[in-house]
Image (tube, rainbow, N blue to C red; front, side, top):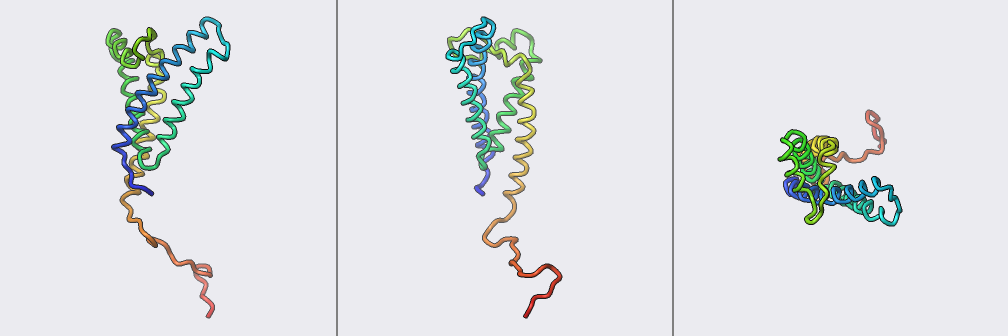
Length: 165
């Protein structure tokens, strides 16, 4: 097992989650506009769905890396939770300004995902799982590990049974 680097994972998680939010906001706005206009031709919808799929795969792979996974999960969950709470608790003007932070430059559509509570729905469990994983990784990193540590010699008999001589 490699040495855990949760602080590096935390930074990577916040950055990756921010990019994921940008991409998800962009593709979700495009897909919602197409649905409202009853334009469901697959050729036009596949790029948006592809973006969402790539974002999910990249974040999932980052969270699976043993050395930084706990930090990535905690960072992504913390960003989603803080932004979701801020969007729901801030006054309307400041909430819309916050929404502009998660918008591709040049696009007109704000963040639908920011105001429907889905950030809290995904952020809180990710944050809790990340903190738990961080604690478990820290506990496992403290255990001394080396060749032959805590390994009992394999005995050809059951415990309590005398060896044959």
